[in-house]
Length: 214
Image (cartoon, rainbow, N blue to C red):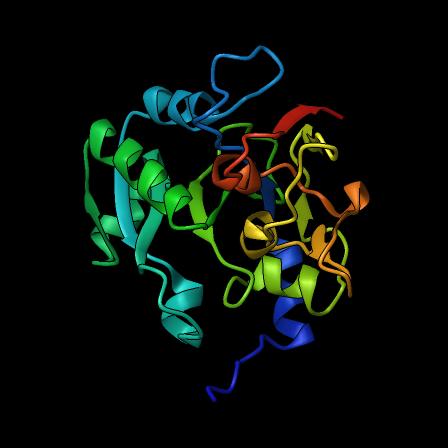
């Protein structure tokens, strides 16, 4: 059995001091509903960017706890220039950036907009596609229970419990442990743990989960 590597508490707190990670919901199946900000949220950021670069995920490269893809970090503008100049990223088109967002969502990764904590710039420096087994922010939140590492999106999920078949597909996609199965294999949902990423929505075989405004 592979030993899972963990970031230290000091490393988690260093991330908290320098960066702010905000969950971006990506939800292809319900993109036409007014209550969601799905793939269009990510696409709007990509379309507004002047320069875009793609590099490897620093967290997965360092910890190597999973088999998720490495080339998933999309950087923008000044940050993109620095990443390319240092040899840590390559230039990509807006179409390629949107393809990365779709692919990583389908693979079960959480999209997070990364901002510098010490600036007021509303435009993110990066959009990362994160896993809770490697990401410093998600790992610190889920495993070390450090608050303030990740900001929730403005959405939360709801389910039609009467139509739920308790298949557990949404449980496997939830990095935040908001969805679990009890000892009788019945689905349990804790909305206070939901960060509104929308991964459970697109995987539900019954299409009974949706995002709503908090």
